[in-house]
Amino acid sequence: MKAWLERYPPDPSTSATYRSESRTWVVKAWSGEAGQVALVVVEDTTGRVSEAWTGPQVAWKMARGRAGAFGGKTLLKPFVWLAFCLVFLVGLADLRRPLSTRNLDLLALLAFSISLAFFNRGEIFRSVPLVYPVLGYLLVRGLWIGSGRRQGPLRSVWPTWVVAAAAVFLLGFRIGLNVETPRGVIDVGLAGVAGASRILDGEAPYGNMPQRGDLEPCGPKDPDGQVRDRIQTNGRCEAAIERGDTYGPVSYLGYVPATAIFGWSGKWDSLPAAHATSIAFDVLAILGLVLVGLRFGGLRLAVLLAFAWTAYPFTAYALNANTNDTIMPAFLVLGFWLASSAWARGTAVAFAGWTKFGALLVAPLWATYPTVDVRRLVRFSAAFVGTTLLAFTVLLLEPDLRDAARAFWDRTIGFQVGRDSPWSPWGWGQYHAAGVPDLGFIQPALAVLAVVLALVVAVVPRRKGPIELAALTAAVLVAFQLTLTHWFYLYLPWVLPFVLLWLLLPEQSDDQGNGKRTASIEEALPVSASHSMSAPSIRTPP
Image (tube, rainbow, N blue to C red; front, side):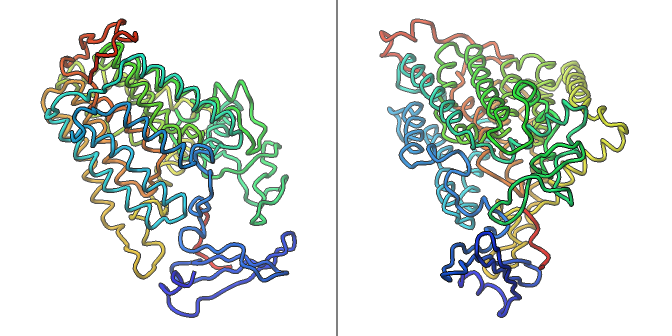
């Protein structure tokens, strides 16, 4: 606390509020443009400091290092997390060539765990910088592989039946962790269910999410003395999630089936619809990878891809957080499976892009696969536009389409462009703290470069095969993530399938995705063991 306050001019303004229900004093410190810079909770009877928060921890509870807040306590136990990392690495690595760059790619995917460890301790100014060298590495590798310079696929040493058995076990274990953590739904899952509930009630989510405002409280106070549950204009007592309408319409439509089946109580409770949706799209992503494997390489590739997804700890992290971050990659993987069809590619990119907007950047690349061809461009564009119109039919639920479109823009892209967040160096300037760099001026240049990259890879190289498509897709998605003000570990599943594909796809796949099946059913049997193959505002004082 003292070290942080020394970053500001002396004698900050302070306020103290007594909470009778908890018999504590809440002390806040304010400093000029930085707004609130410290929060301390003191027990009235003993004078003991029970909480002390500074910097990002003041406004962002997720920055306070709460155990299990994301991903659940069991998954984040060191021995469980490291077991996932070890299984992922040993199961996929080419142990005969331990120093290969392909093995280094696997280590890079796991290196985000180091940053996560600091995040779990609430050390945001250490966790954030550790992300960017790894993202940069993946970007460079994606561009390198995408230019046709791969030296062959990664070759796991394990027989197919062993990998398949491990994948089945891990899938069951991950789903079991999700089901056994009924309170593991983060605000993103709540937003998905609330948005789906609005659609089922005949309203678009945008501008209609449950609010606090001056609405009548109808629930208990939280530890900060705030009441989230309010009587909404529909007469229901619902948990407020004011900024839950910041995602694309497909995100909310994805929650509609489960919400229709399980309903929503209006509270931030176990939210079975969020659990069901998260599990469904996790399984759909795995199924998509299996189909990609069967098409481009046969049974062994299908098994390796399924294993890689289930063994990667950050897909389990997203699954246990019950977030919407596997919806977008699930659509893109299914589109990759049908890569030879411009109709399928256009549909997949539209569904993915109107879930998470970053996927829109891969549209030029996917539109020009495998080469620039006017007829394919027309078919891709027609599918993309048609799917977009279908996704945006949710706006027709509102009485005025123009107002609905304006609300969509303001609540999604408009909000995202102007938001503050400590989860990238681009947002650190808000703290106005000595020794904390303000790097926000770099962000616009990165955004321009990401767009330029998305356009360049659409035409360079002129002809692309599945390996190049996968690698360049990963590179574009990583480039987009590098521009984000609010980056988080839940976004890693966006990129994972395409890194796995650049690592594992066999060389003989042609540019239309008609790969030869290099693995037979016999390889799945034990006798084939010898075979191996590749926040709230802190600006204004009280």
